[in-house]
Every structure is written in C-alpha cells, then in structure tokens.
Image 1 (tube, rainbow, N blue to C red):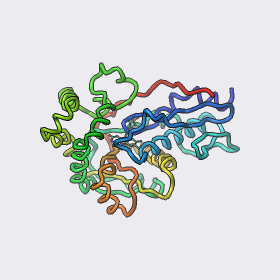
Image 2: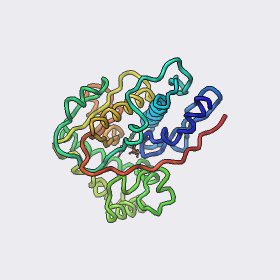
Image 3: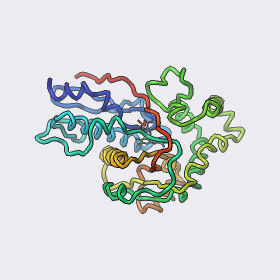
Image 4: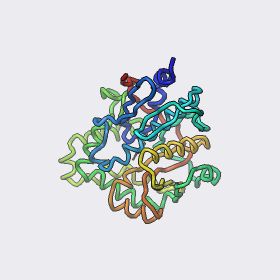
Length: 304
Ligand SMILES: Cc1cc2nc3c(=O)[nH]c(=O)nc-3n(C[C@H](O)[C@H](O)[C@H](O)COP(=O)(O)O)c2cc1C
C-alpha cells in the first residue's frame, strides 16, 4: 500500500476534524503521490461566513488532523499550499495521536467555575488572548440577537440544524439537539420558531430566540480569542486545531462563539479588547457533563 492509500483507509478519522455548523467542507482528492484538499462549495456558509474565514479555518483543521493521523501511522507526510498533502523526508512533528483526534469534541453545556489553569495557557502557541467570560456576556447577547435578526444568517443556521432525531441527516452533518444541549421542549420551540422564521422575526421574536445563550458567559469562567498572526486562514485553522488538542490534553473542552466575530458591532469591540483581528473565540473549561460525539459523513474521497 502507498502512503496515499494508507491515509485514505483512515479517512473516517481525518473527518473527525471540526468545522463551523459541522458542514465538513473538505473534499480530499486522492492521486498517486499527493492528496489535494478541495472545498465543497455546497458546504460553505456564504451568508454567515461571507469572508470565508470559518471555511478556511475548517480546511486548516482538516489538514492538521490528516497530518496527526499520518504521523501516528508512521507515514512521512507534510502539507503544502493548495492545500495538498505530499510525501516528506521526515515524520510530521506532533505530540498528538489518533486517540486525541477521536476524543476531541466541542462541549456546549455548563463548565465548572474557575479560571483557566496557567499551565494550559502557557502550553498554547502565540496569538491566544485570555478574557474573563463575564467581560463578553453583554456582547454575546448583542451578537445572538444580531444572528437571529439577520434573515440570511438565521435561515442558513436553520438549514444546518438537525433538531429531531428523525431528521434524515441527523447522523451525517449539521448541529443536533443533543450537540446544542437542548431539551425536547427547547428543540421543538426552536424548530417551530425557525420554520415560521419571517413571521417570527416580524413579531419581534428574535430576542426570544437569542435568549437561550443569555447566561452562557455569566459565570466565573474563561474565553480564549485567537488573533490573526499574518497567516492565511488555512494555516490559522491548523493553529486552532493544535490549540484545541492541547487544551483537551489538559482535560479542557471548548465552545466556539463565532457570532461574536460575525456580528460587525461585537467584532469591532473584540478587536479592540485583544489588540488585533480576532479569528476565533471560544469558551474554555471543564465540562460538567460528557459532550455527545458529533455526526460525520461517511468516508468517500475522490480518486483521481
Ligand atoms: C471555525 C469554526 C467555527 C465554529 N463556530 C462555532 C460556533 O459559533 N458555535 C458553536 O456552537 N460551534 C462552533 N464550532 C464548532 C462546530 O460546530 C463543531 O466543530 C462541529 O459541530 C463538530 O463537532 P465536534 O467539534 O464536537 O466534533 C465551530 C468550529 C469551527 C472549526
């Protein structure tokens, strides 16, 4: 078996990479001596992610995940712009393994109170700024309200929600009621409100839809902001995945809150707070309950 064939046989593990709304926008194309990672345009979020920031971050997270898997399999592989995976003369240097990739998951439920351990923060690469959760609580309310009050963004979110286990794509992609930690009642309410969205909005119910996140940051916890460091989004996505895996090694989970960067008003305030352009923002802590394992599409890479 060539290295391409061996990595292809592990595509399902590579697909554990995180992506906004769990869109899984990557499309690996397997060739004789390289793997070309294309974007699936049907899996982008043109309305909520018009600059392609989250798309690039997700592709980067996938690239880094593939490199960790390759290294754990003993394959000498590296990433080059494209992005493409090509043969290398050395093993990709990473402390992470397939077990770390399989164990990683976003956790959206409550976290134990207390600030982030200094040791975990010290283990991160440069470009991560720590903020007390409470400092962003008001801005999160503004951003949530903006998300549900902006028709194209709300409708795009609706298209990726799987709020009922009978949804035909429940086990494939998108965000489930379980992943969002919604009770049956909350899931039904959200589904009904979004189904009738134009009316819901006209009735001024955006505030009600946004209410579920009201107390998310009103506790003694931590938020991390990843600042742009002059790299492209794919390279930044690789840095983001390494940070999430590093935090997971410390027993810490993350909960991204990208609406804080998507909403122009809160994005500008966040940039001021961290002294640079924020690319990702997430709550970090020790989850009080075990987060569910998210859905993935089956492996189905394209052969050249
Ligand atoms: C760039 C990026 C942005 C994300 N933004 C959000 C977000 O705003 N809110 C959220 O709850 N999850 C967000 N996520 C997490 C994804 O929804 C999550 O990775 C996906 O549902 C798969 O779940 P898993 O990471 O637990 O495997 C984001 C992930 C990435 C990579």
